[in-house]
Image (cartoon, rainbow over all chains, first blue to last red; front, side):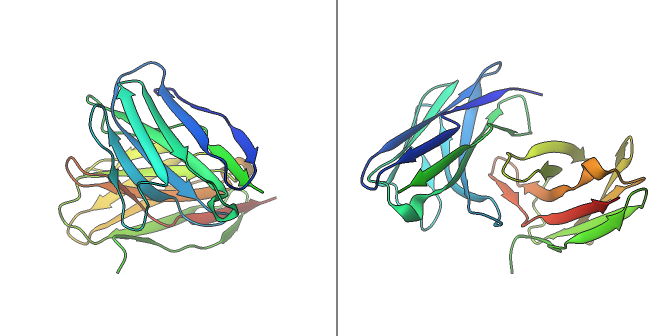
Length: 115
Length: 109
């Protein structure tokens, strides 16, 4: 299957700081990338859909000014958690879909801990 | 009603057992169906796509029943390494992927 990388894999930060997470498709061009969040023992929750060159579409209840998404190229999308607070601590996972695939390929995830 | 529903389990089965999971979806426009597995603290990994005629991959068999809007996954000869959460995923044409809550499987020695 296709390869998607995510960086960093783990981050610990102080409350009030901003954290940027990168998601890259390494061997294909991703027309669409998705950002998910997963709390312990809970389901994956879609946060937003990111299409290259256009504004992200956010799911209901997800603050677009707090979770900034940029999909500037066909291989890179970034999620910035602004002014992070302890309740933002979670497992953030991106996935990518290419135009020729109907499957989504997941990055390894980023574990965010806000102190 | 949630768009994709699964029995959360856990299913605790002995090694070598056969176990089946079901998943129901509410949107009849859904056209693509998948099973993913997710290990603890890891990302989901595609197990198999589900085709209308049903498909098999080794010990795993997936079935789709469009009339009843459910998908099934059968695992034969369970291994300890099959212990994971199994996620049912559906997609409407051109739309997002919708994940079920997952079914936890524990295969016991």
